[in-house]
Length: 102
Image (cartoon, rainbow, N blue to C red; front, top):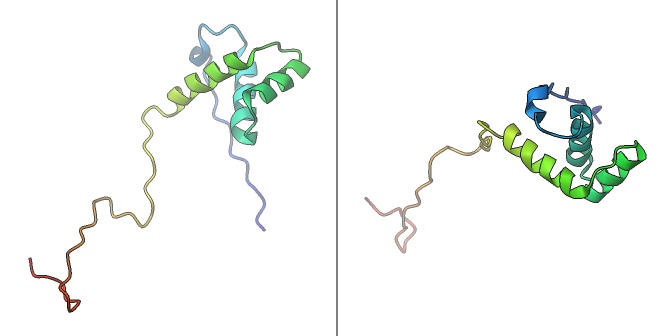
């Protein structure tokens, strides 16, 4: 089994968190825990509480929604490698199995 490679965390500018009450490092930490480990908002709230950061789970929900919109701006969904990128047309067959002439 191949070792799991950790992707580098992109540097987030402090302007991305302009107007937030909490420091950017705390927000990034909460987002990383939520996305990477699939924790619930309340679990992330509890983990931050253990580090001395008192934050409500609704605040974490708002951070996730805000960061998701910023992260997905200008990003399109990757296509399947087998997808031709256009609709596939199916033609009706005659009763004998031959393709109908169009």
